[in-house]
Image (cartoon, rainbow, N blue to C red; front, side, top):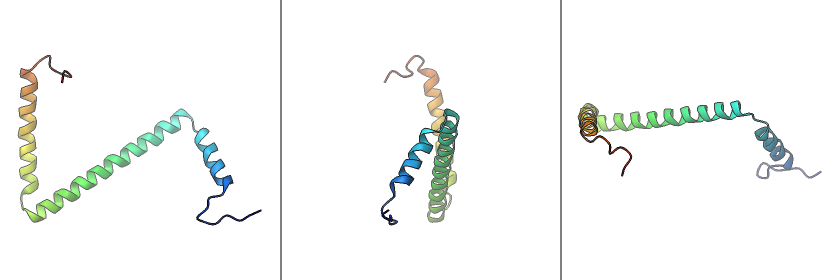
Length: 91
């Protein structure tokens, strides 16, 4: 029997991995997707925090001004949505 090297996966481990994936039930798939989704959002939050910290270090007060501008933009968007009924999803 030939030995496999670390660079060459052996066929038995590939077959076992394929069998374990095919044996997962729907609940396991859903839980795996939920964990993956949470990990993605946590990573995005970490990246946003890192950018905010960096910008705040370069330009003091950057983050507070950004959040104030975001609040104003959201308020304007909500007012625009109220004045434009019936145009939702028609773009």
